[in-house]
Image (cartoon, rainbow, N blue to C red; front, side, top):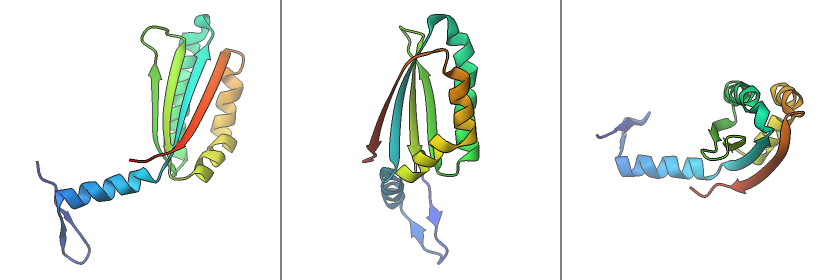
Length: 123
């Protein structure tokens, strides 16, 4: 498959150049990795709340570019998030957002543990 991107000035961008642009654009992002542990009897309560939070982040926050939610295949009460923001300030704003604070309030009683890692994305 070949993708051709035509620029405003009429010139074309090769596949290699397009891939390089995409990698550079995505590389400068701020990555957030979160591990949630919920009470075993609260897994089914947590899941829809977490999925709605991911959806809200993507819909309501223009600088939230990616929000992945995964559930551990061996320990169902463990959930992993991988989020990408255009910059660290966007993540800081995320933490103050109405939908995030509402989510945190809704799940606070069913959380056992929460770990957060942050990093500057390389590619």
